[in-house]
Length: 141
Image (tube, rainbow, N blue to C red; front, side):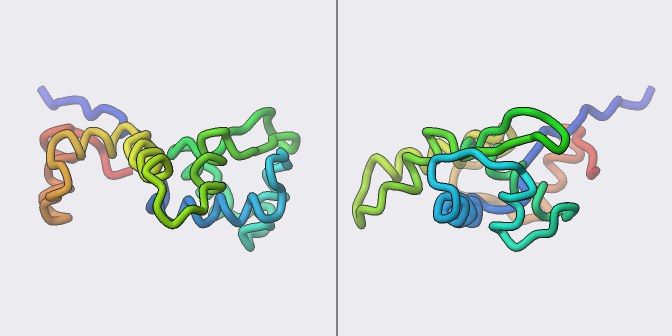
């Protein structure tokens, strides 16, 4: 009997460093205010129907930097207090910001899982892919 593949956990569409930069771009335009998703997408250079804009929202949410409310054309996004804590701390040396960034990096379940298994010494992409597909039975899509 074939092993049923479980649904892979969601993961951010890009790295945390890029997510923080996009959160800063959002903050530069909106500050602590909420705005429509389509407006936020324009801040990042995306058109209202762009999948890249939706990937950006999803990534910021995955790291805990952004929240949303509503649905459809009325869906709004905003920076979370956690996200604001990271992007507003502009000190050169900030143990608090560094700690929050580490926490954000571990917020997506799959990232925490890989950290728990490998720590900072990640194996090759092929080994990671094998682990996720074979050992964890996650699908590619």
